[in-house]
Length: 244
View (tube, rainbow, N blue to C red):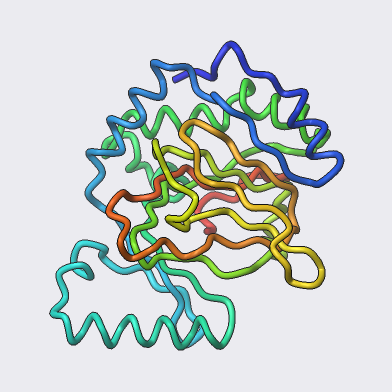
């Protein structure tokens, strides 16, 4: 599992200095990308995550997809009601950070374990320290995320006390995504207008400083291709272990 030998970080460095966000295309070497996309196709222990009654929920994604229609409609209505009231999200995740620290990632998916090791290697962290001008970055956490039709993440800024998040990253792993399908990483100005939006791109790393208001727009219900990505944060201080 290796980074591409042809990375050009200079445009990203300039974007981060001016806007606090940038994209880096072609992050992984071709062989590493093939390994990763193949391994993702074998993941079957997805969690569906959301917030209800102001509490985070981890739900069995397969069981939720198989709910009888009336029960699923009631669940979706509760999720939508919470979204109207404040911060909300609905998407599937495979928590690399938690599984790595629990000692189960290697046995469940050796390739994803290698990917997690890569984002905590000096090769990746050193490049991120350099491009962000943030020598304090000491480790990365991460999760594999899957946004299907109807999934979304409302506006927030990633600033959580005690997490020591320096920057956030999203590595796109879906080919051929169309802008009108939704699932865009959107950034907001102080007036609440969308200031910039990133359409998901295969093997492209979206990187932005924390805190920064952003959201993932809802994936259209007619879309059958999942929006796949490795999502995480570059953090300072000592790695606390399972804390996500």
